[in-house]
Image (cartoon, rainbow, N blue to C red; front, side, top):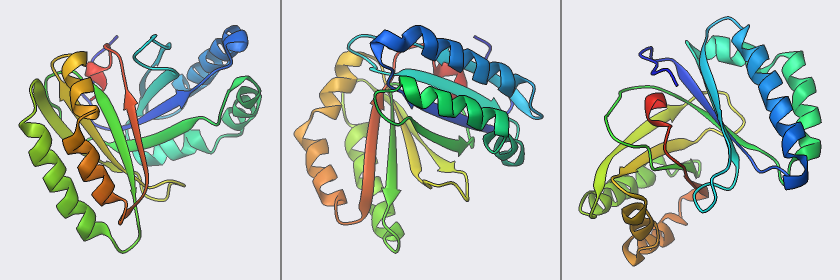
Length: 207
């Protein structure tokens, strides 16, 4: 996979596919990527299949040079037609979000977290996020964390955080720790939705 030096905007899609329809799903995803490559501002894309015990869905990543060109792709009729066909092969609705790049760091992107912050609770969330970052920094195997801005005017504006560890064991130990669980309980007062996605290797050049 190429490493993209341009900044731009990255889209990440999770699709849990009916195992009996994987061939159909992969064909549709390849058609979607082929369409995206012909769109103005396209920089790169890749499909990562499920990995047993690591990620239970297909992960699709693609990058555009700026939000305006990404929105043009998202609103295109050919894309909408293929997505309608995709719904027939999924176990649940796909999960997709987008973020702009602010900086690049070495290491492995081990997990991606997204938070939907309750309106009016932004400051409480920022303070809580600082506590979470301080806690994870002291955890064995921690490499780094980055916070990305999501695009404006999306259906699900979110705060996206990528956390990097040196091994799957250290990552899982953090995700399952009581320290982290306690902090997440505190976040219920100002976070409407929270998602975590463990991801496999091979994503490093995208972040």
